[in-house]
Length: 112
Image (cartoon, rainbow, N blue to C red; front, side):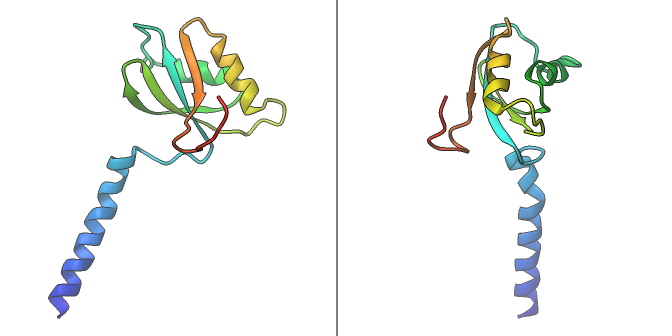
C-alpha cells in the first residue's frame, strides 16, 4: 500500500515540475495581449520589450511566440495615468506593429 502512495506522490511531483514548461515561464497576473509585428521584426533583440513598455507607458513582459509574427505579451496595469486601452493605442501607433489585441482566450468577450 505504501508503494502505491509513493508512486502517486512521485507522479504528482513530476507533473508539478513539468507545469512551467507547459505554460511558459510564469503566468500573467495582468492583461495578456497579442501583438502582430511586421515581417522581419526581431522581438528577441536586447531592449526590444523595454521599448514596448516605454511606448505603452506601463510594464510589458514577453511571454511566448504564438505563430508567424504573432507574439503573446503580459501588460501589468500599474499606472494610474494610463489605461490598458490607451496603452494598446500607443502600441498600435508603432510602425513595426500591425495589430494589438487583448487575448480573448484568457478574457472571452473582451473588446478589441
